[in-house]
Image (cartoon, rainbow, N blue to C red; front, side, top):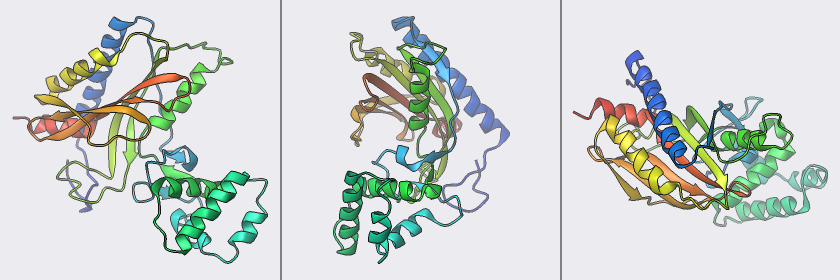
Length: 294
């Protein structure tokens, strides 16, 4: 892995490292499938690949413009257009003519946020992203984000599979997973800590009924830890120092040698009517730790 652009957080990967990343995917998919099938043979696995560009309204409000890369289709910086519009004398006129595009609640939310900005009030991250989503409805050509995680694409695909009109007739329990790039605006010591602006994640959304009596996490967490440790060396499990509002709990798997988080496992509560266990493995970090384990 080389920083040939000389830009912090952007790396080149050689052929050996690319093969290692693919090997990690195959290894972890096999181990997780094996563990869940031992618990319940009804589990079905579905791999998908969603677009890297994601509609902004699907992005979790825990992310702000400081975290994500927002792209305007016409080439204009989306956040710049948003910020200009918030302070524009014409904003009220535009909103008044947009009753067919946004609801009364969305209008009230946007006006309240605009007033906060104009008066120099404290800006809440959740309100910022919600106002940004309203703006994207007003100007839908400016609505795409380079995804900060694969979750929403996997959720959309899972809902497609579970749709009663889908000819495949899929029922829970199921696992939807992706291995692909995500993007975040990492700033501090990004390469030293493998906090990259562009990175690979292998994410599993393990979806099952709320009436299920089996707590799959009890055996899955140690199984994932052992699967990772078998490749990169000793690891430990810790309670995460961050708990996003979509999760009941989050556990991190840490490489002992580098003290680097390589995986997080969360019990999510944002998939309607279902329980979701999310396993998110940073395969770039696994490659880094594999090459530095001796």
